Length: 161
Image (cartoon, rainbow, N blue to C red; front, side, top):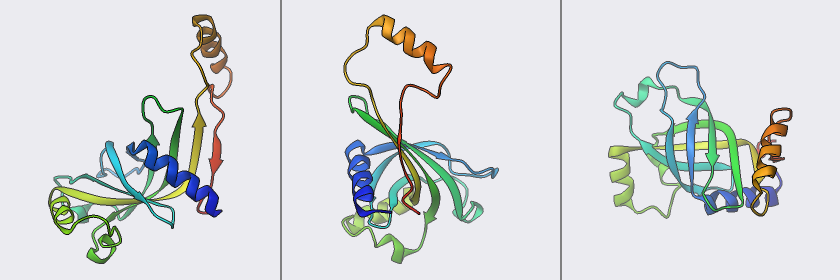
């Protein structure tokens, strides 16, 4: 992936800050759909965040799983949909890669939360249309969206390529 594409995605994800996490696995036991807050997007294209720790033991879950993250914030002129592969991070050495997080916060988080990283495989960036639309324009857009794939034309990035 080109450095400027990764930098663009890092900037946009950090600006929005939170996403809806979807575990797309077919497994019976999987991490639930949740709202997550981004800790960082590293230079290797991984999005890092904490989630509520499930009641079941983590070893009962898949080690890797397909993920979708929907980044949206009210008032922003864009939104992102990130698809990738996720992992639950349990290795203390790997946890230390998030250097800016204080040790006390890491300990607290690891007792009540679970650290997850998602490798960005594909990201779709959607720019919302500028300005407010009239009621008639909304009706026309809704009607035409039935016959085409939505009102937005995404820019698609494949960082893992």
